[in-house]
Length: 201
Image 1 (tube, rainbow, N blue to C red):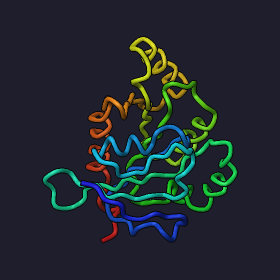
Image 2 (cartoon, one colour):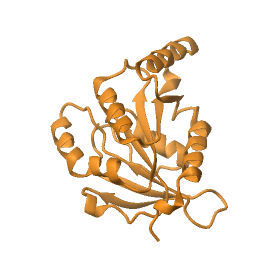
Image 3 (tube, one colour):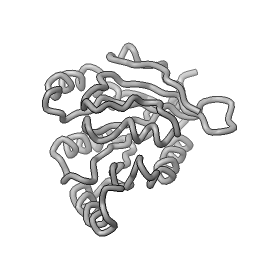
Image 4 (cartoon, rainbow, N blue to C red):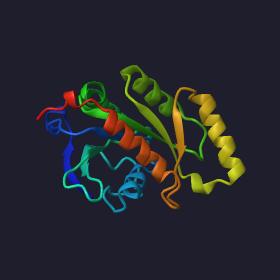
């Protein structure tokens, strides 16, 4: 159902535009790899106990069960906001991350991951403001939701909604699978709605 395509550390390394793409963005310790692996049902993206390990945009082809060809591409972007690596990663943004988010013709959906267990962070606000400016379709994924009680989760989601009133927020747990179907629904809808005229043959 999914396979690794390429790791890009520059805009000239991006795969040729072909299918709708879904970008995964978030702080270095937010659990991006765990979310991707939960969605595809296999250990596709490497998880690490060391934040900031991903330094490239990693592209993965994904196909639905029973379909002969891939339907969508996942793009796992480098994490941000980890103190020891923030300077290096901030240098990567203008070099190839900003060009990807601004100019990629096949980018159909951005999934901005935030840790539901911590208050809204300035770096998350900067990301969401940047994505708003690009006009990209955006959904916020509130990770690690299983660590909160129902009341705590409700309060945390309310805080996120107040901090980011324009964003759709989906609580997600890689441990329990909560939110998996809802995120897939968003991905499928964005892929189906994305204009095929933007693709190159």
